[in-house]
Image 1 (cartoon, rainbow, N blue to C red):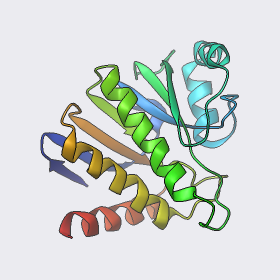
Image 2 (tube, rainbow, N blue to C red):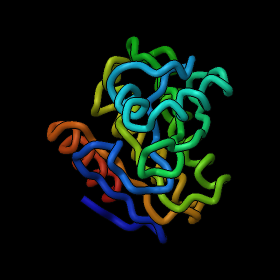
Image 3 (cartoon, rainbow, N blue to C red):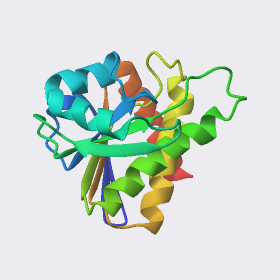
Length: 178
């Protein structure tokens, strides 16, 4: 699924984020930038040791924020490491932290004059964020950002499963209609 908002294409696809040829891919990182499982592990394996070296120099990143490193061996020039929250029950500020991780990633992309950014579904794996609520926050944050900032030409979400893609598509359809 693909829509255009102002001059920015917003795209939803199923795939492998490590294969994206883009200015930056976003890593669903942990606050220690220590690598891990899921998307984080896949990005570090595909990108090579340069990414971990850059993460070690940075040291860490608070939940709800993001930092940028080289893309290493990836097709993407940069990796933006965004730290989403662990989901507890939705009453501990998880929504603000998740939105902050997406917004900080978008702001870093603009600050570094990037034109394209590719996101995974942050916090919906081992961090346990329900995909439906996460999709509303992710897509709402992106749409709000690009309505007031037209520096990006492409924002893509690469989802891991057909079910996640369907959830994101339904959410995007609802958000653009109302």
